[in-house]
Image (cartoon, rainbow, N blue to C red; front, side, top):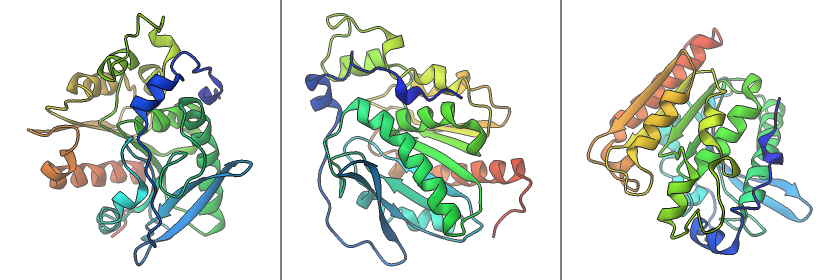
Length: 273
Protein backbone atom coordinates (compact mmCIF):
# COMPACT_ATOMS: atom_id res chain seq x y z
CA UNK A 1 0.00 0.00 0.00
CA UNK A 2 1.40 3.36 -1.03
CA UNK A 3 0.42 6.41 0.98
CA UNK A 4 0.77 9.14 -1.58
CA UNK A 5 0.35 11.78 1.14
CA UNK A 6 4.03 11.28 1.82
CA UNK A 7 4.80 12.81 -1.60
CA UNK A 8 6.52 16.19 -1.82
CA UNK A 9 4.21 18.93 -3.13
CA UNK A 10 6.75 21.72 -2.67
CA UNK A 11 6.61 22.70 -6.35
CA UNK A 12 2.97 23.77 -6.03
CA UNK A 13 2.87 24.53 -2.31
CA UNK A 14 3.69 28.19 -2.94
CA UNK A 15 2.02 31.30 -1.45
CA UNK A 16 0.66 32.57 -4.78
CA UNK A 17 -0.88 29.19 -5.59
CA UNK A 18 -2.25 28.71 -2.07
CA UNK A 19 -3.95 32.13 -2.17
CA UNK A 20 -5.65 31.21 -5.42
CA UNK A 21 -6.51 27.64 -4.48
CA UNK A 22 -7.87 28.01 -0.94
CA UNK A 23 -10.69 30.33 0.17
CA UNK A 24 -11.32 29.51 3.83
CA UNK A 25 -14.13 31.05 5.88
CA UNK A 26 -15.26 30.42 9.46
CA UNK A 27 -18.48 28.89 10.77
CA UNK A 28 -19.75 28.90 14.33
CA UNK A 29 -23.44 27.99 14.00
CA UNK A 30 -24.88 25.07 15.94
CA UNK A 31 -25.35 21.88 13.95
CA UNK A 32 -28.89 21.32 12.66
CA UNK A 33 -31.24 18.86 14.29
CA UNK A 34 -30.35 15.20 13.75
CA UNK A 35 -26.70 15.95 13.03
CA UNK A 36 -23.63 16.35 15.19
CA UNK A 37 -20.22 17.95 14.87
CA UNK A 38 -16.90 16.16 15.20
CA UNK A 39 -13.43 17.60 15.67
CA UNK A 40 -10.70 15.45 14.14
CA UNK A 41 -7.18 16.04 15.54
CA UNK A 42 -4.62 16.02 12.72
CA UNK A 43 -1.60 17.26 14.67
CA UNK A 44 -0.77 19.01 17.94
CA UNK A 45 -3.22 21.88 18.52
CA UNK A 46 -4.86 21.49 15.07
CA UNK A 47 -8.22 19.80 14.52
CA UNK A 48 -10.46 19.54 11.45
CA UNK A 49 -14.20 20.12 11.70
CA UNK A 50 -16.73 17.61 10.37
CA UNK A 51 -20.52 17.27 10.53
CA UNK A 52 -22.22 13.89 10.63
CA UNK A 53 -25.72 13.42 9.21
CA UNK A 54 -26.67 9.90 10.37
CA UNK A 55 -29.36 7.66 8.91
CA UNK A 56 -28.91 4.12 10.16
CA UNK A 57 -26.16 2.12 11.81
CA UNK A 58 -26.09 -0.42 8.98
CA UNK A 59 -26.37 2.15 6.18
CA UNK A 60 -23.47 3.11 3.88
CA UNK A 61 -21.45 6.14 4.98
CA UNK A 62 -20.07 8.73 2.56
CA UNK A 63 -16.96 10.61 3.70
CA UNK A 64 -17.16 13.83 1.67
CA UNK A 65 -14.41 16.34 0.81
CA UNK A 66 -15.96 19.58 -0.48
CA UNK A 67 -14.81 22.30 -2.89
CA UNK A 68 -12.42 25.14 -2.10
CA UNK A 69 -14.94 27.90 -1.30
CA UNK A 70 -17.24 25.71 0.75
CA UNK A 71 -17.57 24.58 4.37
CA UNK A 72 -19.43 21.68 5.95
CA UNK A 73 -22.29 23.98 7.02
CA UNK A 74 -23.08 24.57 3.33
CA UNK A 75 -24.26 20.96 3.26
CA UNK A 76 -26.73 21.24 6.15
CA UNK A 77 -29.70 21.02 3.78
CA UNK A 78 -28.05 18.45 1.52
CA UNK A 79 -27.25 15.99 4.31
CA UNK A 80 -30.94 15.03 4.74
CA UNK A 81 -31.15 14.34 0.98
CA UNK A 82 -28.45 11.72 1.38
CA UNK A 83 -30.31 10.35 4.40
CA UNK A 84 -33.47 9.95 2.32
CA UNK A 85 -31.40 7.85 -0.09
CA UNK A 86 -30.36 5.59 2.78
CA UNK A 87 -26.91 7.07 3.38
CA UNK A 88 -25.01 8.44 6.38
CA UNK A 89 -23.32 11.63 5.16
CA UNK A 90 -20.09 13.02 6.66
CA UNK A 91 -18.64 16.18 5.06
CA UNK A 92 -15.27 17.36 6.40
CA UNK A 93 -13.44 20.68 6.17
CA UNK A 94 -9.79 21.63 5.55
CA UNK A 95 -7.49 23.58 7.84
CA UNK A 96 -8.75 27.12 8.36
CA UNK A 97 -12.25 26.27 7.09
CA UNK A 98 -15.34 26.26 9.29
CA UNK A 99 -14.36 25.30 12.83
CA UNK A 100 -10.97 23.93 11.82
CA UNK A 101 -7.68 25.30 13.11
CA UNK A 102 -4.49 26.03 11.24
CA UNK A 103 -3.90 27.36 7.73
CA UNK A 104 -4.56 25.39 4.55
CA UNK A 105 -1.70 24.22 2.37
CA UNK A 106 -1.53 21.54 -0.29
CA UNK A 107 0.90 19.49 1.78
CA UNK A 108 -1.28 19.61 4.89
CA UNK A 109 -4.45 18.83 2.91
CA UNK A 110 -2.90 15.73 1.39
CA UNK A 111 -1.50 14.53 4.71
CA UNK A 112 -4.62 15.37 6.73
CA UNK A 113 -6.92 13.26 4.58
CA UNK A 114 -5.07 10.13 5.79
CA UNK A 115 -5.59 11.09 9.43
CA UNK A 116 -9.23 11.95 8.73
CA UNK A 117 -9.71 8.59 7.04
CA UNK A 118 -8.26 6.59 9.94
CA UNK A 119 -10.18 8.65 12.52
CA UNK A 120 -13.46 8.26 10.64
CA UNK A 121 -13.12 4.51 10.19
CA UNK A 122 -12.40 4.04 13.90
CA UNK A 123 -15.15 6.45 15.01
CA UNK A 124 -17.75 4.68 12.87
CA UNK A 125 -16.72 1.26 14.19
CA UNK A 126 -16.66 2.45 17.81
CA UNK A 127 -20.17 3.90 17.40
CA UNK A 128 -21.66 0.83 15.76
CA UNK A 129 -21.82 1.97 12.13
CA UNK A 130 -21.22 -1.12 10.03
CA UNK A 131 -22.33 -0.29 6.48
CA UNK A 132 -20.17 0.13 3.36
CA UNK A 133 -17.68 3.00 3.37
CA UNK A 134 -17.65 5.35 0.36
CA UNK A 135 -15.24 8.23 -0.28
CA UNK A 136 -16.43 11.25 -2.26
CA UNK A 137 -14.70 14.43 -3.43
CA UNK A 138 -16.02 17.53 -5.17
CA UNK A 139 -13.73 19.85 -7.14
CA UNK A 140 -10.65 20.47 -4.95
CA UNK A 141 -11.89 17.63 -2.74
CA UNK A 142 -11.33 15.19 -5.60
CA UNK A 143 -7.61 15.31 -4.75
CA UNK A 144 -8.23 14.08 -1.20
CA UNK A 145 -10.75 11.44 -2.31
CA UNK A 146 -8.44 10.04 -4.99
CA UNK A 147 -5.50 10.11 -2.58
CA UNK A 148 -7.45 7.83 -0.24
CA UNK A 149 -8.77 5.62 -3.04
CA UNK A 150 -5.23 4.91 -4.20
CA UNK A 151 -3.94 4.32 -0.67
CA UNK A 152 -6.69 2.29 1.01
CA UNK A 153 -8.53 0.36 -1.71
CA UNK A 154 -8.99 -2.62 0.60
CA UNK A 155 -10.77 -0.43 3.18
CA UNK A 156 -13.01 1.53 0.78
CA UNK A 157 -16.14 0.11 -0.87
CA UNK A 158 -16.84 2.85 -3.41
CA UNK A 159 -15.66 6.14 -4.89
CA UNK A 160 -17.53 9.22 -6.13
CA UNK A 161 -15.80 12.09 -7.95
CA UNK A 162 -17.86 15.20 -8.70
CA UNK A 163 -16.41 18.06 -10.77
CA UNK A 164 -12.97 16.54 -10.26
CA UNK A 165 -9.80 17.55 -12.06
CA UNK A 166 -7.59 15.13 -13.95
CA UNK A 167 -4.60 17.39 -14.53
CA UNK A 168 -3.00 20.08 -12.36
CA UNK A 169 -1.32 22.10 -15.14
CA UNK A 170 -4.51 23.50 -16.73
CA UNK A 171 -5.90 24.20 -13.25
CA UNK A 172 -2.82 26.25 -12.40
CA UNK A 173 -3.26 28.27 -15.60
CA UNK A 174 -6.87 28.96 -14.67
CA UNK A 175 -5.63 30.25 -11.31
CA UNK A 176 -3.25 32.62 -13.12
CA UNK A 177 -0.12 30.52 -12.59
CA UNK A 178 2.15 29.68 -15.53
CA UNK A 179 3.28 26.06 -14.95
CA UNK A 180 6.27 26.49 -17.25
CA UNK A 181 7.45 29.57 -15.36
CA UNK A 182 7.67 27.64 -12.09
CA UNK A 183 9.12 24.53 -13.72
CA UNK A 184 6.04 22.46 -12.95
CA UNK A 185 5.59 19.00 -14.44
CA UNK A 186 2.42 16.96 -14.11
CA UNK A 187 4.15 14.24 -12.09
CA UNK A 188 4.89 16.89 -9.42
CA UNK A 189 1.19 17.57 -8.94
CA UNK A 190 -1.73 15.60 -7.55
CA UNK A 191 -1.50 12.84 -10.17
CA UNK A 192 -5.25 12.23 -10.02
CA UNK A 193 -5.21 10.21 -13.23
CA UNK A 194 -2.55 7.88 -11.83
CA UNK A 195 -4.47 7.45 -8.60
CA UNK A 196 -7.86 6.63 -10.12
CA UNK A 197 -6.15 4.14 -12.45
CA UNK A 198 -5.38 2.07 -9.32
CA UNK A 199 -8.95 1.90 -8.00
CA UNK A 200 -11.08 -1.09 -9.01
CA UNK A 201 -14.09 -0.81 -6.70
CA UNK A 202 -17.49 0.67 -7.75
CA UNK A 203 -16.93 4.22 -9.02
CA UNK A 204 -19.14 7.14 -10.08
CA UNK A 205 -17.87 10.24 -11.90
CA UNK A 206 -20.19 13.28 -12.16
CA UNK A 207 -19.37 16.37 -14.23
CA UNK A 208 -21.19 19.44 -15.53
CA UNK A 209 -21.49 19.76 -19.29
CA UNK A 210 -20.33 23.39 -19.29
CA UNK A 211 -18.03 23.40 -16.26
CA UNK A 212 -16.19 26.74 -16.52
CA UNK A 213 -13.51 25.86 -13.96
CA UNK A 214 -12.65 22.22 -14.54
CA UNK A 215 -13.34 21.15 -18.14
CA UNK A 216 -15.84 18.40 -18.87
CA UNK A 217 -12.98 16.55 -20.58
CA UNK A 218 -11.28 16.14 -17.19
CA UNK A 219 -14.26 14.19 -15.90
CA UNK A 220 -14.19 12.00 -19.00
CA UNK A 221 -10.45 11.40 -18.59
CA UNK A 222 -10.89 10.31 -14.97
CA UNK A 223 -13.71 7.96 -15.90
CA UNK A 224 -11.79 6.40 -18.77
CA UNK A 225 -8.69 5.90 -16.62
CA UNK A 226 -10.64 4.06 -13.92
CA UNK A 227 -10.27 0.27 -14.33
CA UNK A 228 -13.33 -0.61 -12.19
CA UNK A 229 -15.71 -3.16 -13.71
CA UNK A 230 -18.63 -1.40 -12.07
CA UNK A 231 -18.42 2.30 -12.90
CA UNK A 232 -20.74 5.01 -14.17
CA UNK A 233 -20.45 8.49 -15.65
CA UNK A 234 -23.10 11.17 -15.24
CA UNK A 235 -23.12 14.33 -17.34
CA UNK A 236 -25.29 17.14 -15.96
CA UNK A 237 -26.58 18.96 -19.09
CA UNK A 238 -26.45 22.78 -19.27
CA UNK A 239 -24.78 23.04 -15.86
CA UNK A 240 -21.55 24.78 -14.85
CA UNK A 241 -19.18 24.18 -11.96
CA UNK A 242 -21.28 26.02 -9.38
CA UNK A 243 -24.86 25.11 -10.31
CA UNK A 244 -24.39 21.41 -11.04
CA UNK A 245 -26.37 20.32 -8.00
CA UNK A 246 -29.25 22.73 -8.62
CA UNK A 247 -29.63 21.89 -12.32
CA UNK A 248 -29.19 18.16 -11.95
CA UNK A 249 -30.52 17.37 -8.47
CA UNK A 250 -32.73 14.45 -9.51
CA UNK A 251 -30.18 12.77 -11.76
CA UNK A 252 -27.36 13.52 -9.30
CA UNK A 253 -29.03 11.82 -6.34
CA UNK A 254 -30.30 8.94 -8.47
CA UNK A 255 -26.73 8.26 -9.60
CA UNK A 256 -25.56 8.37 -5.97
CA UNK A 257 -28.25 5.85 -5.12
CA UNK A 258 -27.13 3.54 -7.93
CA UNK A 259 -23.51 3.75 -6.76
CA UNK A 260 -24.66 2.83 -3.25
CA UNK A 261 -26.47 -0.21 -4.68
CA UNK A 262 -23.27 -1.23 -6.50
CA UNK A 263 -21.39 -1.10 -3.19
CA UNK A 264 -24.06 -3.07 -1.36
CA UNK A 265 -24.04 -5.75 -4.07
CA UNK A 266 -20.26 -5.86 -4.03
CA UNK A 267 -20.30 -6.55 -0.28
CA UNK A 268 -23.20 -8.99 -0.59
CA UNK A 269 -25.38 -6.75 1.57
CA UNK A 270 -29.16 -6.71 1.26
CA UNK A 271 -30.41 -3.36 -0.04
CA UNK A 272 -31.56 -0.82 2.53
CA UNK A 273 -35.02 0.68 2.48
